[in-house]
Amino acid sequence: MSTFQSLGLRKELMKAIEDLGFEQPTPVQEKAIPALLASKSDLIAYAQTGTGKTAAFSLPIIQQIDEKSKHIQALVLNPTRELCLQTSNEIRKFIKHLPSVDIISVYGGDPKEKQLRQLRKGAQIIVGTPGRVHDFIRSNKLKLGQLETLVLDEADEMLTMGFKDDLDAILIATPEEKQTLLFSATMPKDIQKIVRKYMDDPITVNAGTENISAENIEHTYTVVKARDKYLALKRFADYHPDIYGIVFCRTRRDTKDIADKLMQDGYSADALHGDLSQAQREHVMKRFRARQIQILVATDVAARGIDINNLTHVIHFHLPDQNEAYIHRSGRTGRAGNSGVSIALLNTREKNKVRMLEKMIGKKMIQKPVPNGKEICAQQLLSFIDRIEEVKVEEAEIEPYLAGINSKLEHLSKEELTKRIVSMEFNRFLEYYQDAPDLNVSASGKRGEKRSGRPEFARFYINIGKRDNITPKDLIKLLNRNMEGHNFDIGEIDLLRNFSFFEIDKEYQSRLLKAFKNVDYKGRPVTVEVTDKPKRSGGSKFPKKRKKKPHRKGRSKRRD
Image (tube, rainbow, N blue to C red; front, side, top):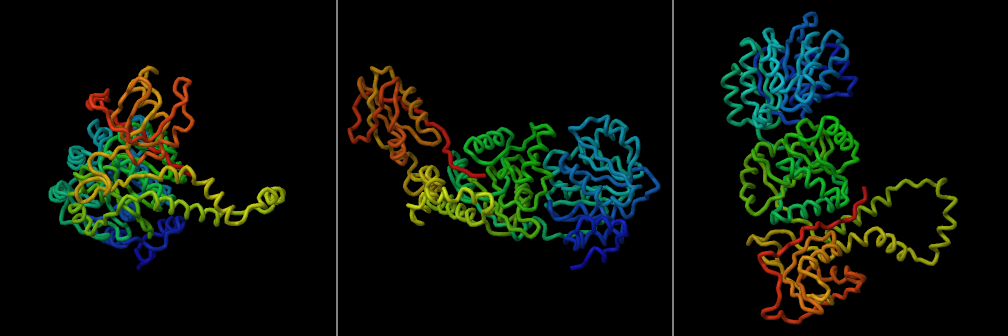
């Protein structure tokens, strides 16, 4: 592999590169930089986010800037303000030793007047979003008559986000004699139209292969019932205690709902969506980069511009509307030589999309089952033991307390002490997964081998009835309140005068009996027992049309 020294960059740029600690160019940099320095030809580069494409186009642009002139010589278009700011910040690092070169960022969500004041001062490089750039061109505030280079960065994503009309208007407003550089992870038909209409015999650079996912990303999928997707997400998070990743959802509402559920269930999570202000977004991203947040739940649009090299997982809670977006999402893990995992949570209707995705990414997707309770507990216990082994012991700090601690624990053997430590940490966790159902959908399209379309119910006796003024709704509330944190189905309810019968999913039988050991209703102690007493014919049953299935979600113990 070549070095930056061999690419022919001027000394000021080499100094900036050395300051950043870069030694060897990435594949797209190694191919694009010499080509752009040697020719003014248009260029198409197949490159995903995180491949070093900003340096690939900006270093040649900076090298060829006329520092004495303040007219706009280069325009870089990005799909979102986040990516616009990220690109601008990277370019500023490259021009660190070139004080005569200026750059301005123009994007939506920021006051126009502030950006217009900067434009009036003049700059050689503009980085902007299509909407704001088009707005300034239309109002005659941004003049591109002397533009020499136009960069369409993440062009496919700009079209996916609906910027086609803005791009057309911007391209028409630029001089015919200019260099156009197009960087894209995929080449959909709309991009091909832009190439044919606005580019002249472009050079092609492949940083990898068109539409091919990074080799160090493992693409997996699992098939569950749509209603079980959240439970499956939690299980994968529990199975990977050190998860550091992004969960992608289709809508803002889904993003907020899932992030809220994760946080309520004790996970280190937060949401990133279009309803956040820029200050709120920056706060969330600051915490995520510092790994104070393990799981970021985001929409495709909100996630643009996120550039973090050590993400372990990308989870597709919903598949994107555009198949090409799957590559963008998955490409956020497996960067900088790290390995990563992409997990698609599919419902039974989405399974047929696997073959299309495999064709697009050029590799086989592996079907992985949702981990069961025993597998998750084993992983969590091993992680706990690893943390014990790795903990830093401050001898001086704990020395004064050791004598008292040893005295309190001297009657316990090593094995007993180990059991107690593990139990103290995991009792709730082990109990939660004790009767956890199999969420996987079998070949027949049914959930788990033991489960048919309808749960198998257990029937219970409870010592309260109509004389206690209890209604079916009251009984459901009582069950939910004492079984909080569990997602279970309720069957028929049979209310009698002095007692009642009810049904719940048989898999939750032991938890229910434990939950009702010390419960009272309106000051009266409650007794709940399993019964094999048959249902009454013509009894007062909870009407099926009003049958309610609680959707309380289970809580698993997390340590962040």
